[in-house]
Length: 305
Image 1 (spheres, rainbow, N blue to C red):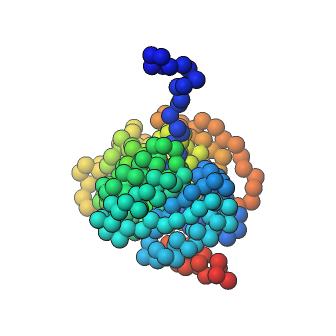
Image 2 (cartoon, rainbow, N blue to C red):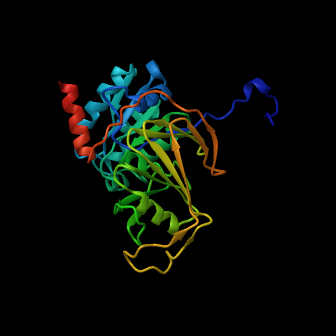
Image 3 (cartoon, one colour):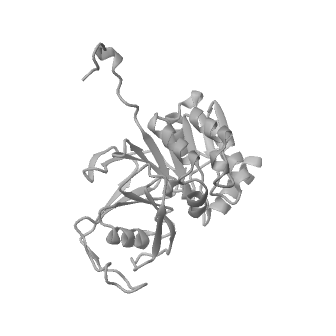
């Protein structure tokens, strides 16, 4: 109900909160569909974007690549926020840049660096403030994983789920109840995500292919953008021996439900159900790369040429 003395016209709905969770190796040179969507969500020609390259071992190169792409997509302003310690993650100028941003973009690299240098700091609080006021927060690869409450910081690859094949670390907590994984099909990460869901069946597993994004609004509605797929693993009704299996043993996981969602699919994360599907006919060039370092270096070299 409106407060006493107010009118209905004075009551406003809270801003829509948006995450763009990117599976890594997004196209930066051709159709740039995923990054174009990010700039659009950030305000298009009015976008003020902050790039956080902290996870990357090539931070300056990563900033140059994304600044070039976002500028080409007509973003109004692109700046970098790169704390090199937890103390620097409280610097007033860095916090002010995030507080003014309409879009925050966290690059790929090493998830543990993000956990150690950003999670639990004033910068993390500033990112949450931006998210709550309606700025789009995006992450690619390691930057995607850190958006959830619990992120995969280490893990083996492969199809078979195995006991203790992955490690969870605290993330930024912008998406509770979900474990995010990236480079999903390209690096064969089915097993590690399924093993984590088997051990924590109250959490949904969401795996995202390269050059693909899960656009998630208000922690509920997931829309798929890009040339790959998003996989949702629901283990709530599954039977597993995760509580007693020995280390590295293959896990029993029976009854888990896997949803494979291509571009155009709309999925409800609360009800864990498909809501809509609009088939996309656009030809999409999918960029694949063995590592984030090589992917960034190749993109930087191409942009220089």
